[in-house]
Image (cartoon, rainbow, N blue to C red; front, side):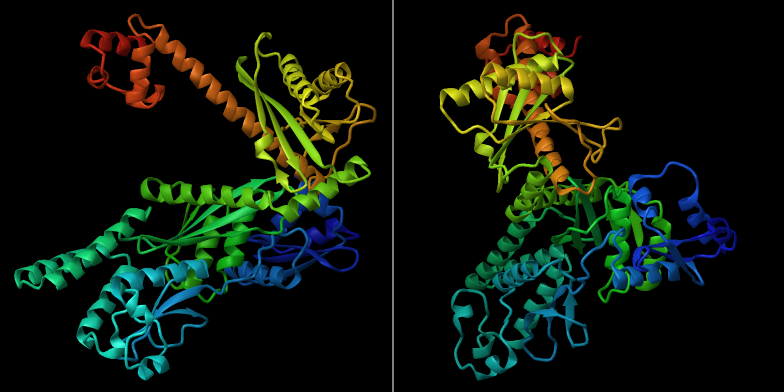
Amino acid sequence: MQNVKSFLNNLTHQPGVYQMLNGKGEVIYVGKARDLKKRLTSYFANRQKDVKTTALMKHVENVDITVTNNENEALLLEWNLIKKHKPHYNVLFRDDKSYPYILITDEHPYPRIDFYRGSRNRRGIFFGPFPNVTAVRETIQLIQRIFLLRTCNDHFFTSRTRPCLQHQIGRCSGSCAGLISPEEYQQNVQHAVLFLQGKNQQILTELNEKMEHAAQQLSYELAAKFRDQIAKIREIQARQYVSSEHGDADVIGLAMAAGVSCVQLLMIRGGRILGSRAYFPKSPLNVTREEVLSSFIAQHYLNTTHELPKEIILSHALPEEAWLASALSTQAKHKVVLSSGVRSERKKWLEMANNSAQQSLSSQLVGKSNTQERNKALQATLQLEKPPHTIECFDISHSMGEATVGSCVVFNKNGPVKSDYRRFNITDITPGDDIAAMRQALLRRYKHLQAEQARLPDVLLIDGGVPQLNAAKKVLAELDISEILLVGVAKGVTRKPGFETLHFIDKPPIHLPPDSLALHFIQQIRDEAHRFAITAHRLRRDKKRVTSSLELIPGVGAKRRRELLRYFGGIQAINRASLEEIAKVPGISQALAQRIFAALHNA
């Protein structure tokens, strides 16, 4: 890269792939472009770049260019090069696309249902793919309980002269012993196929007709069997979040925190949720949500052997949606749509995927080995003799000074110790005075620990800058506590993660790199304190508002307030209630209901 200007001037405007190399000739980043000249010029332009690009360009010594015939070829080549080189500055997902299926064979008068993984070159009907083995096992067990299909192999089947244990526990029809005719067994197979296709209503209609016909023929045992099948299917329907009988889609949720990303893949087939699976990519510092999603779609779906769904629902819109959709449609040989702003039922699917991603990310962050590794990194950063045994973090939350609450969260070498969490209702301060609120919370916490002669934390994190840190210093001095290391965690100007400043009492502040494990641990603890403080603040604020809004209404005393809250379940439900609904509450007359309704709606 001795002559950047000459290099850029000789670039083509065609689509292609570029590989950025460091001084050792190692590929550190692979990217694609519709227009190579325009894309690469943006890297070398004299304008402010994001943190990731700035860090990348410091190590780039050479760029290799590969021109492709079209944009889709560029996308495929990029994926293959990322898979081959595993560049440091690309988002990397584990290359594991071998999904399990359910197979119903058709080579035998009594077909079997089985777990299957691999290329689908066997005879039979395949259902899936399922996100994990557990989802397949659970579905097969459901099929066994409802439709009594066999799971034994053909050799075992032919060697039997009497039914096995599966028949005795009600999971097989005993076809090996001739307890069911091939015609009746085939009907069960057809119902199982409809069930796996999500056509539950069609099965219920057929079973209802058979039950009524059996009852008319006075075959009450047969009618009872059909009744039990109907009941089991309805029970499964009630547990299924998705109730429609149509829709094949993959739903991709995303959660990011403390330098870790989680992509949650939720699979919908025939309107039924088959299950979900979490992916944790290896990501460079300050990667964006759009980059993570784009990388997942390219690496997960391109050059795959399993069938692609007709729709992929995303948590965020992507700038390259049309490009990715075109490449996926070409591979799948049918139209694949990428959607983000979804509504109705698909919005519920997306909310479920996002919630699952958040839960999976939380579990990953509090994992024992992960926490211990971060704790050691924090020890090195703070120059401690040994890893901190206990870390506490304080935060303050309020709404324009209303219902101020202080929170204290506690972490040890294995993660959060929620039994030691504490919250403090702050009183007798000037509304909005965060310094006074922090002082009060710290005094109450450490006076109590001293009184109980409990172990003090090794590190105390304060969510805030120098003023909050000085307040904490004064509190500890008053209580004659000197063995706690004080650290103030101040957000950057943009308030984005990765730009925090760590303040200390007796040494200059430091900025940790955005990919620092120690910083990620501090962010995790700080975010947990923030979450706990906001939750406590909202509870206190809502309780205060409930009390004040009802207490100000003439004629509504403690007993009637209790009846109102018991009847509706909360102040929000009371606010939504109509005049007629309020009048139905025991002890509330029509005239009083009118006063309550008018007061709540400022009428």
